[in-house]
Structures are given as structure tokens and as C-alpha cells.
Image (cartoon, rainbow, N blue to C red; front, side):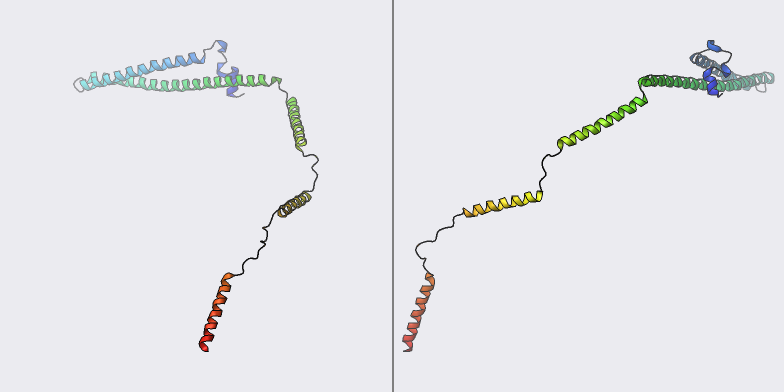
Length: 218
């Protein structure tokens, strides 16, 4: 059996105390009171040590006996002070261990409450029923998808798209031919148009020049 198991089951060091033992809060309060008392004792001893040291210096070699007595008292106070330091270290270690144990106990207790709450939540939940429900949901989703595809499927639209395009081109060409047939060209004038008046005038001028040349040659 582990130490943790003994602690939570009331075994080990808690064997003789039973349910009438002090609570962690009470024990911690007692330890803090003891620490305060020993700290005050430390301050008192430190003051006495300084006082005895001052007396020893004061008497010096003039009153050797009084000086030695002061130094002896100082040594006793220093020994007590050393003992109190060790006691305070032990109490501090014990207090920290008790605080950690109390914290762990509260954490364990709260985790137990959480576990009980989760157990209560899951009491009415059956894994087999959950699996069946999820299968039903998946099946219904598949059915809904098939229904959607069936409703959106095109009906009666089995035509060859190439044939439709060829027919459309024929209709467009027929429409174009109709438009060209309805176009009216301008009519040809009844009177003949004059034929190049500029060319005729030049020819008359050339004839005049030739007549003048012939007259000059004769």
C-alpha cells in the first residue's frame, strides 16, 4: 500500500487519532503560532547576546570574573539561539508539507466531485444507442441527398447538342438571307451620265495645237 493510499484511508501516522484529530486548518494555525513565538524568542536572545557582549567589553581586564560570566551567558544564549533556528526550520518544513497535503486533499476531493458529476451526466447515455442514433442520422442524410439530386435532375432533355447548334446556324443563315432580300439598291438614272468632260476638253485643245502646228509648217 502506497503512502498516498495510507494517507487518504487514514492509515500510517493517523492511526491513533481517528476522527477526533485536528483539522489541517487548526494544525496550520498552531504551527504559525509556534513560529511566531520562537521568532520572538530569537529576537530576545539576540538582544541578550548583544547585552552580554557589551558587559564583557565593559569589564574587560579590570573585572575579569564579571567579563567571563558575561561571556558564559552569551554562549548559553547563542546555543539556545542555534537550537531555535533548527526548531524553526523543522516547523517550517512541517508546515509546508501540511499545506501541500491539504492542497492535494482539496484537489483530490474536487476531482472526485467532478468525476461524480460526469458519471451522473452519463447515466442516461448508452453507447449502443448513441451508435444507432449516429447511424440513423447518417442514413437520413444520405436519403436527403438522394432526394435533392432527384428533384434537381433534368427531365426529358435527351437532345443532341450538336444537332441543336446546327439547327440554330440554319435559322441564323435564313434570317440573314431574308434581311438581304429586303435590302433595296438605288435605281439606275434614266438619262446617260456625261462621259468624262475633262477628257473631251483636253482632246479639243490637242486638236487646236495640231492645227496651229500644221499652219506654221505650211
